[in-house]
Image (cartoon, rainbow, N blue to C red; front, side, top):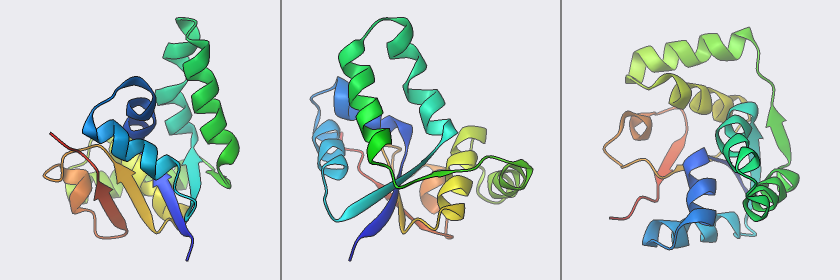
Length: 136
């Protein structure tokens, strides 16, 4: 079965920038042929501007390649933001984490993969499977 996966921005950034155990897991998620990826403008905003402004072309290509492989980009609108606000209130999520979770739910993701620690509020969300690949 192919899993619809929403990847938190930190997974993409780590997959390119570091050689930690978490980064190796991040690369394995991004390379997993049993996953199809969905994304949002929030992920683009968190991943592309910095490497573009600093001229890190290889990193930009890596990130753009990820976006090219995504099967869906979730539309941002007032209903999504309202849902995010509700999720933030229910789970004590940061604003951007709430937007990521709302986008993943709207996109019918089977899972949201993140590098947040398993003890963080995002990992308590019950509306979808949130998988922490954080390694110390």
